Length: 119
Length: 107
Image 1 (cartoon, each protein chain N blue to C red):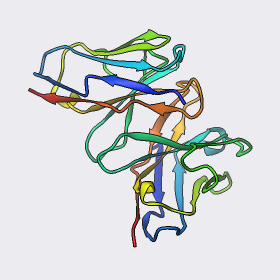
Image 2: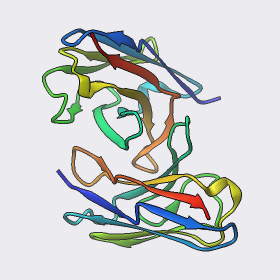
Image 3: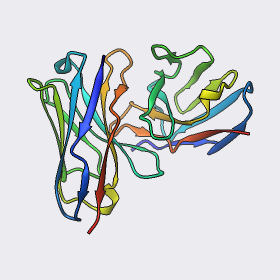
Image 4: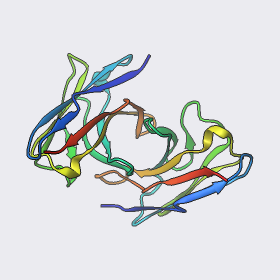
């Protein structure tokens, strides 16, 4: 079964850091670009970051550029999002998603992990 | 950044009725427009890619149309499981962006 499982969310103080992980299974992880998308409580969806299959190309939303870093370890079938200088506006469910080379967009999503920023 | 504006914000319909959802882009996205369905507590589900192509396993009652800046998602006859929030999303330019969503609710 194709699956993505996020972990690492939790409560962090403003200005703090957190690393999210996304474990992939059921497909050849190293051949797929991957994305992080977030959703603030009761709000819509926002693309956060993307990374190519090799990890050689990365993309960030302006709202997180310079604070978040996307990376991947293809030997461990795992995607990461290192988040720093966290703010109240970063509170959201963070989803990892697989980009389909056929559809050109995210076709498989994880269940999400909640990040809360509060003192 | 390309802004996607969805209308209406809420659509109140009965099962069996036809639903027509609109998505307008602030600049041309060619046909690089997708539609997702999201139910409470769940991740989004891909319905339509490249404006008019159904993703794997998506029922034929879902169809998409449009190009450039104006797009439509049509659900020909609403079933109970179709009441949800629908988002359009463009992949023409990074950052990829979503519309704010249209909620299809039971009338």
